[in-house]
Structure formats: C-alpha cells, structure tokens
Length: 161
Image (tube, rainbow, N blue to C red; front, side, top):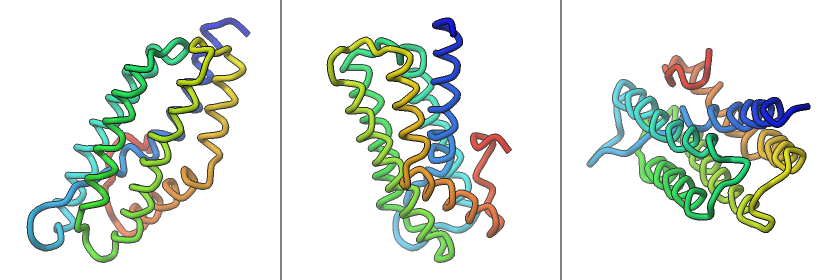
C-alpha cells in the first residue's frame, strides 16, 4: 500500500470517527434553555469549526508538530466546553453530554500522536485511527447523534447523511 493510500485510509477512518462527534457540537446561550432551532444552528456552526480544526490536522497527520496537535486539541476542547455549558432542549440534554464527552476524548486521544517518534508509520496511524473510531466514547457520540436525529434534530451535513 503506497503512502498516499495509507494516508487516505487513515484520514477516512479518523474522519469517520471525528465527523460524527464534530457535527454534534452545540453551545449555550444566556439564561434559559436553547430552543430546538437555536440548538440546531449551534450544532451546525460549532460542527463546522471542529471539522475545520480536524481538517487542518489531517493535512499534516503523518508528521504533525506538537504545536499543530495542541492547536487542534484546544479547538476540540473549546467546542466540548461549549457543549458542557450549553442548555439544550430537555430532550437533547443527555445526548449533549455524550457529545461533549466524545469531543473531550478526541482531544485527549491526540496526545498519543505527540509521543516519539514524532513521524508515525502508516501502520501506527491506522492503528490509532481504528482505536479512536472503535472506542466506546466515539460509539456513544454516534449513538447520541443518531438519537438526536431520531428526535427530529437537524445536526447538519457534517455527518454525511
């Protein structure tokens, strides 16, 4: 498998794991609970932000600098904190907490890429991507996103369908 093919495989696996959570990001307003419409708008807006952060990391994932990883982690943790402090509609509250936990997990998981050697082999990156994608935290984020959809929430196109 060529390096481009390995990169595409890794990118696909990581994107699948991350996109499910990224599109579920929401933020809180002042005062009471967000309306469904406000919450959906927040899900899409912050989902786009997280997707952008992860997309920029994807360009350098085979040889990321600690600074690049730190920037991505900061963006992910900011999104997760927006969820932590959000006041979504009552029927979305439990899903919102699961999405926040998933994003915090994603941010923390990037620490694995900071360990030497900085440049990772394709096999190491693929194992990392599979580990993240198969984690219980990501599975819970996927389930929360699916539950929001089943409740009629439009979580945006980031989920790919």
